[in-house]
Length: 262
Image 1: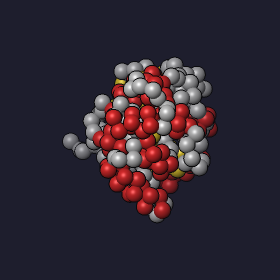
Image 2 (image 1 turned 180 degrees about the vertical axis):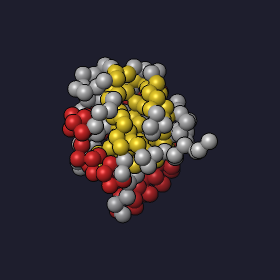
Image 3 (image 1 turned 45 degrees about the vertical axis):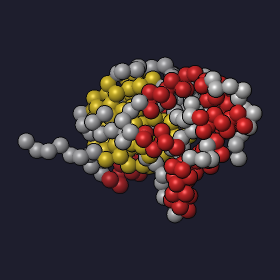
Image 4 (image 1 turned 180 degrees about the horizontal axis):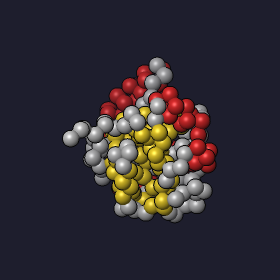
């Protein structure tokens, strides 16, 4: 019996700071959040790949804007959140649904992770320890609450934080340096964070990507997974952003602070 081809994840840069993710086996490819069709088509052509599936996490145009053009060239299923109206979706998904792709051979579990948008979902490849989380969790941060509540976002992030520490976090934007600049302000005494910030500064100075990260690294350095930690709560109290240690209020204050942070 022949060994199945190994899977790879390739970042396709788009717009100013997006990553469109191409999951492929050197022959067939699935794309996650194709906000722009052109760089995906270029990547498929240059690598000799056949598109077999489109996977969407939420409705924002920089994640779903390339679907129509891709469908004009490829007859493929489009998986996406059942709770959002996205043109082109043929396979609406809910929490605990499983996506089984034959080519590339990949099984993905679906998580509901509302907060950034009302129906946002994430995809987890348990066999590979991969997470495709759109704009819910970022390297060093989390998405803005455009449609959901702080309570929803804390629950969504808790689901992601419960994944194995070595899970690779394939988020959708290169926001890491600005996220960590804020994280240092929120938790200045975190040694792991200081070391990560210094490393990311060097990576970005060289023009390198900082994604994927890992769940373990996020749990040690991401303030939006650490909003219950005494060190973060001290900063929120000292800056007058909270009066007590209520976790949801603390998360909301942290997110509001980040919204205006420069």
